[in-house]
Image (tube, rainbow, N blue to C red; front, side, top):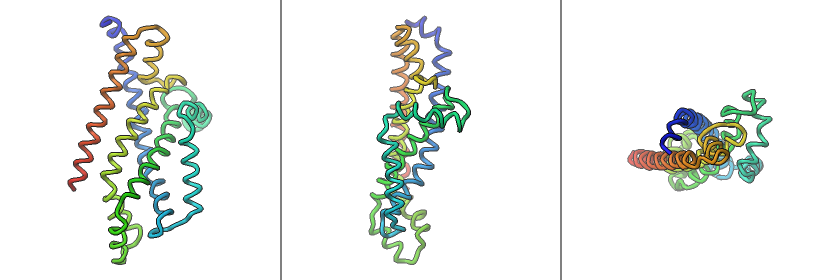
Length: 220
């Protein structure tokens, strides 16, 4: 078993790097765009801001459509878009497009929920002082929702890590691809076990880091 693992040590490191590449970039895109979309969903629903049912329904419907498609199917459907954006339908770059879109839609709903949990009384009190809506968002809404947002970033990262394991089915690389090629196609179950153990460690590490970050921002 040890000899088999040593033989593919280089492949394991490459696959780990590919997993980090896919997850980090897609999660960063998901956080940035997902937060903005979450703000749109929240502010267009809340009468204290710029309530707009048409915009809210359209944006919400798009998010719901994306979330209703299983990621494996979404990944295949978006391969032509990957070709258009990154110039290829295979490899980690190609998988970045569906992963990022999945991350954006997933985090958008979570961030909307985080903003909705902020006390309306606090927001109303700040608005009554004559502060602009933009200032309320920056000074009150986002800081108050920050611990929940950080917690949801952890959830999103773990989810996208799980999605990235499917990348191997379209030649995207990563630990999932390695586990499939060696563990399933070549019947080297020990390689699959190693990949699973690495993923478990990554999830535990991400969760622990997220809990630490939540405690840090909650103290401020």
